[in-house]
Image (cartoon, rainbow, N blue to C red; front, top):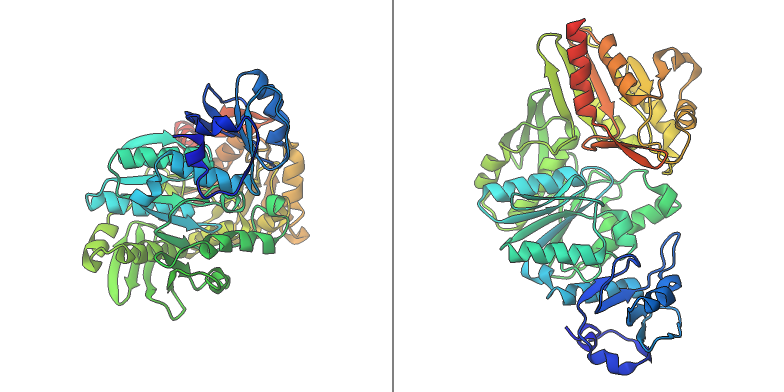
Length: 489
């Protein structure tokens, strides 16, 4: 497509060789390491890097088309497009370059602190079970029907996102269910995306290292609903007190779900065991393999979305009974010989850890002990660390604080910061073991028949990042090895 056509309806000024407006753009890039002849390079301002600083170097390597916000004088006869907002221009142009794929798909976005992966994955499973060709964009993985594409971000950058949607369209997908992170909303990575509907799950303290404060985090989520058009739907959890905030300014058709509020999709938990949930939805019973109050909310969001997309109520309930949890989300391992229950969960925020442990406590029987292994990621929101320590001790008989992904922080310093949230009277229940593998092994050794070991924080991740290096590591596999070791001793 010609550069002039890509810029249609975008306000801009040209500097340099305006004849290049008639050039064919063969690729898009906002990464100075990724370009070819015919690339249009977007100079974006990031948290630590400014794309404008790479323009002259790219000129010397043959790139002739650039777009940015700062005034830049080119040296090699290329063209520089100056716009007011380069990130929004990137979204519009990326969509246009790939022939507006989101306009040919029904894209449903899920945002919130917790539940995004589960809701998006369950919807993907559900609509596949109906026989639709379906796409998934999630933290765990991206999928085009049965084709798995590894995920690097919860929500891809604008170019990668529209390229992925184009591939889904070309594979004849009708529906796409995607997680939308607060970072992606704030950075306008989804600008130019046509969204059929958006779901709000809940919000609690997270990512304050990026957003600065909780209010900014809330309004980053709200921005998604502010951008919805009048033909879209907004489905909001009204049991979360910020639910009403999300829909204050939206033009979308608003629908609500919850367990306790006056809503369109009302749930009531009949039974909640290690085997699953019995949930009443709008006075009709659903038996699900999923466990916990938090999954009751996830199921309500899935049910409401399916109906809003035109599916039959009874068909939806029948197919929902067969859905399974997303990888690393209340992922259960039961060893019959030892009688030990282990759970792997991605809970990495105070709210998520609180809800998972509350659910586990409801499943106590007799002398059941709860042993929790968890940590907090390095180079991330430090404010949540003491609170997560406090919550772990509140619900557990024993707690091992261990490394999550320390990244470039000192692992033991992170553990000590978590420990500051624990009262002196509870310190006897707490152990600091820096090595996560060792922490998991010891937690299994401490467990007896009927006990529950929760290993939280990493969930589906297949690595551990230490000092900037990623090593192969998987909580689920480490639990299995620890159980085998216990049985062999």
